[in-house]
Image 1: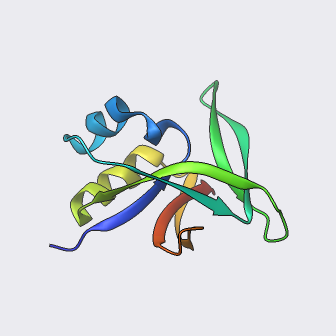
Image 2: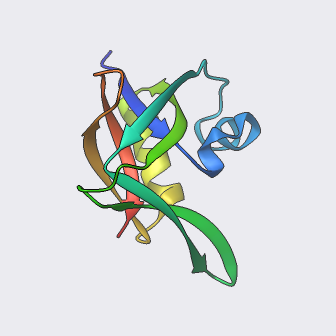
Length: 103
């Protein structure tokens, strides 16, 4: 089974939220992302964090990574909705990860 690394910086950092989506607990590893900043965006009347790509930014987003299966990744796509899109990024640790950014 192929596992996918996901970088979480907002609601997916919450263990209960992750469990409610993928239906299991996950281990996490702290990591950082450069070249992005976090902005609050309003969706359905509620504000959520969204990563915005800024290649020249010196900011670092502190987050956590966790591993999911292909089926669990699809569940995360549904949860994140059309408001976010999933892209591949290289984290400060050098690891490759999926990241949800503002669509």
